Image (cartoon, rainbow over all chains, first blue to last red; front, side, top):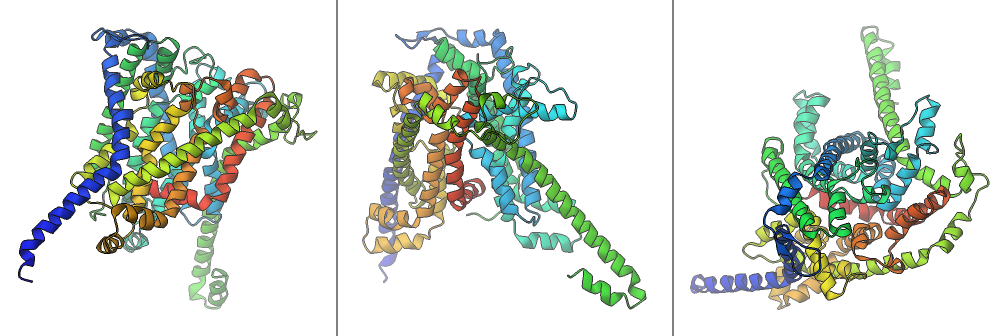
Length: 308
Length: 302
């Protein structure tokens, strides 16, 4: 027994070395995938962004030409504006609505499971199907929405076919899919310990104070996570617009989103260098947004001290 | 019941006259609140259900009836033939089959590579593990356009463009970060003592992974399979970039095709949308528990 102290060092180090080797072995599929499908193409994109490249032959180095081209590109500015417009409205609205519905469902509502299912189903409808459905219900002359509006003597706009209304209609389509975050928020709300509310009640906190001082802080990490993900996704908004608007970006260029323009530059016009510059700028944008959110989150996100 | 009985008893005593009024006012307020909650929920439910109801309804109408004003809520005649007609006009079964194949192969890939990777990130302790794990999570926020062009050029060199290989091969290399994350979260909840006992008995790490952890992780694996299936079923972007031949189209691309070709016949378009949506909704009802738990697992245990 006296010798264990001496021997102990070697086996633990051995075990640690063994575990490290094994750990790397187990994650090796992802490591290979990360290098081949993320790391290499990411740096290749950065390189292409300084070149002129059509996909055939070799890229020709052009320095910052693509970036300065973007500065003077009016369509690029429109695409950037449209994307911001969509993001700035869709993300706060869908977050607030999803959170609101989750809070409502969490208040001992009878039939909670039924409502939850109803709100969730639209978010699993295939994106092409939901796009087609929305084109149809917002069809200017025969769609159900304008028909219902005319019942209350409102002359409905042309929605997807109207320059001022096309983006709001896409936002409505986005809001239809808020079931996903709502289910997440609901699960988070159900995870808030009941005792915390009891203590708050004992200390005379009203419903509003309980919401502000207990509920929101307790689920704030999940809100942050969801907000970041939905921001990143809506900045890459593309699929629905691609399915619905043809030619893409119409009417006018009111639905020319960032990735729509990227896709056009890359796969229609084969300006691969130019598109790569757009891709890299998008990366910078996403990075800035994420970092800013994470930095400011220290003020409003509450982390429990306990470590898992 | 609770509300009525004190009213009866306290009605006798004059001093507590105010109480019943207070009680009933509180009951009224509670009723009002409940009514308010439900009316908000019912209105929102109606708005959420309307597009789907309208889709199914339209799919049973004649082409003319879909374009009738004022709108017809209940189709008459109730027309079934939009479905067979549409399936005859477009190779729908081909699209279904292509989608199934795409889903099946990537499910195999995800199950193998994500579970291995998740094991390495959760059941083994090694320096830098969590830092590497965060690097993996960071790829979630990397926009897909940041890697698209070089990947396209690379696949073209491999001769993979036009087929499903660009969409399938990466899944064998842990490209589904979401699945890896979900499995890792689940593996973390399995007590380490199980592994340690097996190690003392001389079990190899692969044996522990294959014979102890994977059997315990069946519910999590079910969630991963389900989500991967739905991902493939819905995926539009991947096929749009890589699949060019109409015969190889998955359902999503095939569905987008009808909008271009048959915009005049909305009954057909909605029949196509219903045919693509119904299987997923049915699947959801069959697996609801797995579903909701899966979302909760990935969403809340960050």
